[in-house]
Amino acid sequence: MIRQIQSSRFLVLSLLIILAACTRALPLMLPHAWNFTAVGALAIFAGSLIEDKRLAFILPLAAMAISDIFIGNGFSVVVYIGFIAMVACGLLIRNKITPGSIALASVAGAVVFFLITNFAFLYPWYPHNVQGVVQSYIMGLPFLRNMLIADAIYGTVLFGGFYLLEKRYVVIRMNNGNLTIK
Image (cartoon, rainbow, N blue to C red; front, side):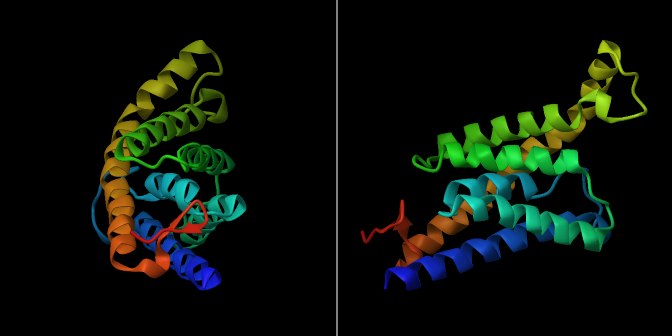
């Protein structure tokens, strides 16, 4: 019974992650703001809810890699490192998942992602000095804003949707690896 619950829970979590990763294709279908995808929210979501920590990192990164192939953005190690940091923020709240902890992890994750991916020394078009770093961070602020808004919206959908599914279907309801029936 426990194995069936774990399998069902894993399947539902995986499907939600795949659906969230599909939001990266929105620029190909609809006009939308840069960095307005569910990827940041799914990194926090995976880190906080997938029991196996290795899979918590692998699933969102695999979803990113697959979507990179289809949308043709290329592969940026720095972006993947940023998302690894966001999954780690999700790991930090896994024992106390509340709306407040989700919001805090989402903001912290987006800021860490912003700091990592906008570090000027990573880009040849900014001078490699303090002014270049400052310029890179200033130019990245609209992307940070979009990511924060997207993480709030998509995080609400992911966490809220999963919460509602757990309420409805006992087979996916677990708490720290233990079945919880309320």
